[in-house]
Amino acid sequence: MSKDCLDAICIGEALIDFVSTEKNVELENASRFLKSAGGAPANVSVGLARLGKRVAFVGKVGDDSFGRFLAKTLENNGVDVSNLLFDKKHSTRLAFVSLTDEGERDFEFYGDESADMKIRKEEIDKISIENAKIIHFGSISLISNPSRDAILTAVRTAKAKNTLVSFDPNLRLSLWESSDNARLQIKEALGLADIVKMDMGEMEFITDSADLKAGARYILERGVRLLVITLGKDGCYFFSDKTEGKEPGFDVKVRDTTGAGDGFVAGMLAKILEIPFDSLTTKDLHGIFRFANAVAALSVTGDGGILSLPSIEEVESFCNL
Image (cartoon, rainbow, N blue to C red; front, top):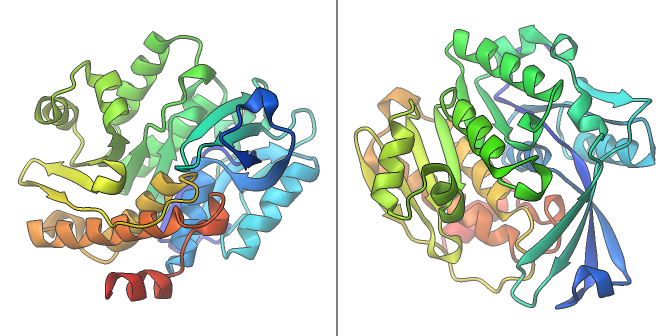
């Protein structure tokens, strides 16, 4: 990986989504699937690259056809993959996905001992972590060691250099040993994050409160500096210790919501990279989240996660409509 300063490093899981090509069919009855590159941090890395940012992905995949497909997909989309590792003993994680007519998803994951969970802290390039402007990670890599220790060590390395840390809980409870363990690990991660994106269900799970402002206050009190809660087509709420607001979403025809949240994160981080974080105004935040909502809206109009992530030109044209 280049030692030059990157705009962002996304660290965590890259996996294969097998998405049912039949709508409104439960997974047990689905017979045809489309292979697609996925994994939330990997999706965010491609989203940032398509928005013109210098980004690297850090993680581990199997030394198999799926792992090589993921590496090629990321590299072909402009992501630095020089610290994407291949594991000869463990396979690439797989996810099977079914869709409704509204684009909502149902997941089943395969690979409890998958390669993405086997990355070790000594395998991560510390110098690149220290030189990036933003580090982004999610919760799936926190499920077990050695990946949990590796990711948290990398994040703490970034924090020591005052690098901005972005975290998306991206809750997939079926992968966790227990809901209590998931809540515990996510709360620890919140204490390391400057920027957090989550949806209403994740906020309620973490804070045990369905009250938006009470939940936001709980999360900000853990040291988070900017919290955004996404509302799907209705846009998002944002909170900091200085301000709060709501940015409306865009009305589009939904085809597939896979990767919409990751597209939102990519749009958010792309704009945050362009403004000194400590000087963000309420006006700036509205602009940032309008852009992020636009990226998410465009992403749901196409198929799959990475496939549907828009370019900077597409977003700017859409926003000017």
